[in-house]
Amino acid sequence: DTEVTQTPKHLVMGMTNKKSLKCEQHMGHRAMYWYKQKAKKPPELMFVYSYEKLSINESVPSRFSPECPNSSLLNLHLHALQPEDSALYLCASSQTVAGQMNTEAFFGQGTRLTVV
Amino acid sequence: GQNIDQPTEMTATEGAIVQINCTYQTSGFNGLFWYQQHAGEAPTFLSYNVLDGLEEKGRFSSFLSRSKGYSYLLLKELQMKDSASYLCAVRPSRGSGTYKYIFGTGTRLKVLA
Picture: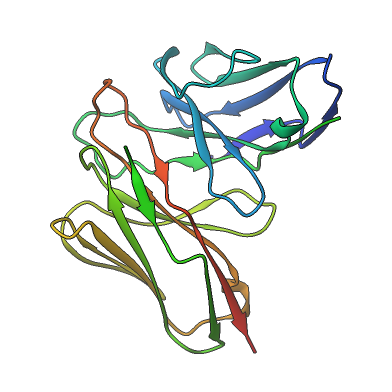
C-alpha cells in the first residue's frame, strides 16, 4: 500500500466556519507534511511532523492548526479562514530512516478548499 | 533563503526529446527529486539524485551536478500523456533534525501531436 488518503476531496467553507482536513497513510512513514498549492504554482510547505511531533512550521498563520494524533493520521484544523486561503491542500509522508537517502515523499490527492 | 528555479513553460512534439532544467541554491543539500503533476492531481515521484551524474529510469533520466547547483530531467519518446507539470524538489540540510522537501517553480510541459 503506497497510498496517502485525504478527505474530503472538496470543501467549501465560510469565513466563520471551523473545519478539518484529514490525511491517512499506512506505509509506516514517521514524517508527514502539509503543503498548500495555488493554481499554476508549486506546492508550498506549511508543516512537518516527525514521530508525531511538530518539527517545522513555515510561519503559517494560526488560523491553520495541525495535529498528528498517531503515526498514521494527520489533521489540519481550519478556523476563520480568508478567501485567499482557497487552494489545494496536499498531505505527504516519507520515511525517516537515518542513512537512507532515497526517501521520496508520497502525496495524497489533496483537498480542494474554497473559502467564501 | 532557498531558490529553486525552472522554466515556466515548455512545448515539444510527440516522439521528441525534451530537457527540463532546474537550478538551485539551498542551505545544504540532501537530494534532489523530480515529480510529475497532472492538473488537479497529486504529484507523483519520478526520480531521485544525490550524487553527481545521470540516473536512468525507462523514458525518464535525471542528471545532477552538485558543484553547479544544477539538475535536468530528460524525457524521451514523448507521449501526449506526458503533458503535465514537472516539479524539481530539493531536500536541504536537516538543520532542525527533520527533512523537508522544497519545490521549485515548476515547468508546465505541453506535448503536441
